[in-house]
Image 1 (cartoon, rainbow, N blue to C red):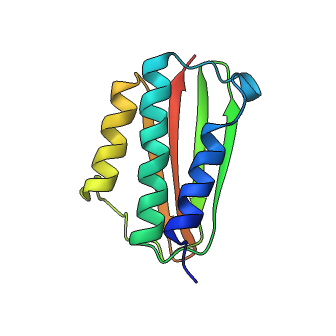
Image 2 (cartoon, rainbow, N blue to C red):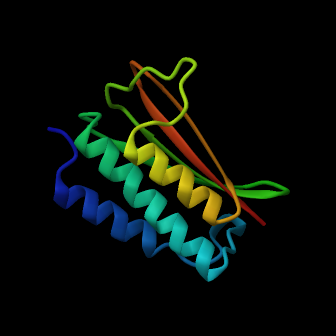
Length: 120
């Protein structure tokens, strides 16, 4: 079965309870707010549009950015020569910009990955 609303809410709540500073993530309150909304949008998109069964979240630290990457196993969508046009992708791009960061995504027949790069 696709991600249920319950599973999505549970997973999202779990992400929000991760300890502060995990893997070197130290966002400002504004960055944390936009990151939470970014994650919620990614879960919503995976559940509503991708028919995804699972979604994974990775947190990484780099010299200039902290990275939150979400990958689903859904049906994906065509991205070739395409700027974000769906409201979900536009919302995520807006959240990235407001956090002072960047948004990257890739999608194909084996799923979609979205990543938020937050300046350190």
